[in-house]
Length: 309
Ligand SMILES: C[S@@+](CC[C@H](N)C(=O)[O-])C[C@H]1O[C@@H](n2cnc3c(N)ncnc32)[C@H](O)[C@@H]1O
Image (cartoon, rainbow, N blue to C red; front, side, top):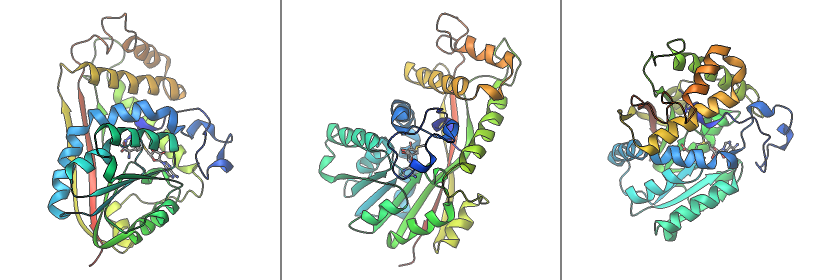
């Protein structure tokens, strides 16, 4: 999630993730247990719903009346369901390696009365896309491509599953989230900037340890072009929730900072760890649970590309 890194700070071993068994137990510190991440992924996507709706309004200018939308690496399906709502004529298929997350996606679709045009495919990407019955008119991949070892090859496989004239929309990168002023009244100012550095290093390690990892210049438009598509646009979308924030946003900020503190302790010095402890202590008036200046500011970048008709 700069990459949006809030998605992968788990130190636990990987459970039930198809095709990653060779990885199991060797490099557990960058391996993500996606099922454990479910509540966090869900809460995050729900908070970001206004941003996704803006993305969809933008996509609707390029993609008119899609028959099939595929959410590649959908996670718990919050965004998949937003697609089903934004494009009422479309069938949506959520594809993910984690069956527990897809279960949540199906349950959400049922709750929202979308089940009749909602399906899921469980399996390792990009191969699982081979199970689609039809080519996609819109293939969406949000913060999922960067979890695949060979991103260039995966984009070629994604492009091959597009219908003629179909659009691939890739959400990767943007700006790291900000939740607090530079100076919060205690600790060394600039905590979030230092957390960004630790996260960026974690991200590099996570990628290097993926099965079949290939290093790649993250020039997404160039990679989309190399996959045989025509790059049609790049736009960044802002989530701007100024202080004072809702309890939902506060809980999200606390969850992200908790993960950072617990999953990346080695990169932080003792003072910063103590600052995080204070920020996360609900009994402390200066904590993110209670202080008045908490906000959420975050940018996501989306790149679109079209398969020739
Ligand atoms: C960071 S989450 C993104 C979820 C959702 N797209 C969003 O933007 O909120 C990454 C998702 O990719 C899935 N994933 C990661 N590696 C995968 C792989 N090799 N094959 C299939 N799915 C994978 C995970 O299960 C997880 O649901």
